[in-house]
Image (cartoon, protein in one colour):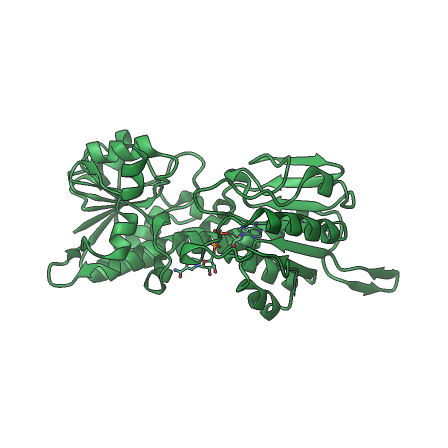
Length: 376
Ligand code: NAD
């Protein structure tokens, strides 16, 4: 069994394997080939991969006879010529936005596995790239907000007077939001948070933050399938807008993370609400790529409206490449190890396994995933 690790394209700093996971694959009996320079963005040298037992070489060298190809962002199938038919391509293949590229994988005979479609079940927690990368993004959102904000986060009592603590409001308390709360607390801010899923109230409190929730409105339970949020009723949205209006004018920093799978990001802050915030306040919108939670947010840019800086955060995990690569690489290694057949010394993916049906996009020259077949 040969595992190939690709060097990513421009803009992607992460890498899909680290020396630790190379050793893990070697321990399973696989050989590992890493494309030269693959670890550069994550400060891992070719020598470190070689020290862990991998061979390093050109793209053609690593693809030759590879059974499993590991990547972070999905490459164009044209860059994978030389890969053998039936090889697994494992990574964040972004099937929702790259349906043509996925069809090209099928034509190339590759079995594409999209790790971001990993089902949210306990057994798959250690394989979940969305969680591992969101966690780091939640941390980085607060650090970026702190560096953009022209004031301090913690309360400081000095001989020259007292500096008040920053007030931080986190909207959307999933994986990223929870880490944002924890990070803002560590920096000494006064933190409050909201979500549509009532289960998050206790989680917010357990981190020492104040929950801000809509109460007593019909149709408010925003818990959908697999622990994800679902769309809320118009009554709920109106009540939420009123609640946010009252709270947001007193906040210095807002971190928004609200997402609904398969839908544009819910609009949580209007321009009129923005205008009530104090000039110099900062909003980091982690939903920027899904359309943004904040009116006027531009993905990849910081825009200032009414004196408030709105940071349209994109791919924050890439700015912490060493850590995000390590977690991503372990997610992939945990997945492959879970399906490793010791006797055959290869990965075996049963057709009736929930994880396999969740992430398998192509097989035997065809697109096989239900979500992609219905979209065709
Ligand atoms: P997400 O990125 O899909 O959404 C972020 C948050 O935004 C969610 O908490 C959601 O409820 C919230 N949100 C949506 N609409 C909103 C609105 N209008 N106003 C306020 N908030 C809104 O979520 P996520 O971070 O991926 O996690 C969601 C849940 O799934 C969490 O409880 C997490 O622990 C769980 N999870 C489980 C597994 C697993 O079991 N394998 C893996 C990952 C996540």
